Amino acid sequence: MMFDLLMTPIEETPQYQSAMRTHDDPQCGGIVSFAGRVRNHNHGQSVLFLEYEAYDVLAKKEAENILQEIHQKFPIKKILCLHRVGRLEIGDMAVWIQVTAEHRKPAFAATEYMIDELKKRVPIWKNEHYGNGESSWVQCHHR
Amino acid sequence: MKIQLLYFASLREKIGRAEEILETSCKTPGELFRDLRGRYGFTLVENDVRVAINHQFEKMDYLLKAEDHVAFIPPVAGG
Image (cartoon, rainbow over all chains, first blue to last red; front, side, top):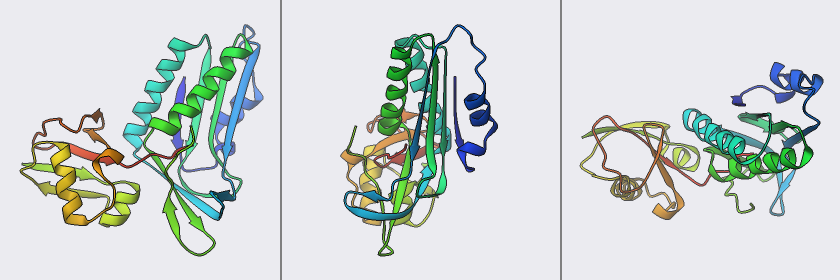
């Protein structure tokens, strides 16, 4: 199980490419992948680009806590989570999660748990830049 | 007592820097936060933030020690 923060596009990393291309666990039949991408709007405002900032050490610690919880709660074999920081353009992948399990139900449940908990707990912030030149730090209200 | 503050996101932007070494007589993160708020005039209130000491989440009534690294965590928005 693994969590990492990156400054480069997620799709270009060896972890992502290897995970999307190969399947080396014949016991497992349910593999769920989730990609969170940058939208061009938020709360009715047009977004030009985002900047993600992380408290690296604590983000990795808290993400590892979430991964531990997932392994305790859901019968899954493997979970990978990559989160990009820095400037992201519309459409860029900000976060990617892949869960490998024997069966699909825990794979879906673990994926959802990962993104939900990450959004609530992990010290990563996003600064939205708008068409009018202003920017604001997003406060997540959705769960 | 000398402590090291780490600032992130909206706090970093408002205060104008990512780190600060501070001589303080504040005993807890709660006291320290109120002190910083008075000093820098940011709009976040105590209920809005969490605190991490030496890269670990702690409570606002934690007893600060010399050389502690203190980070106030504004509302997060990852993913």
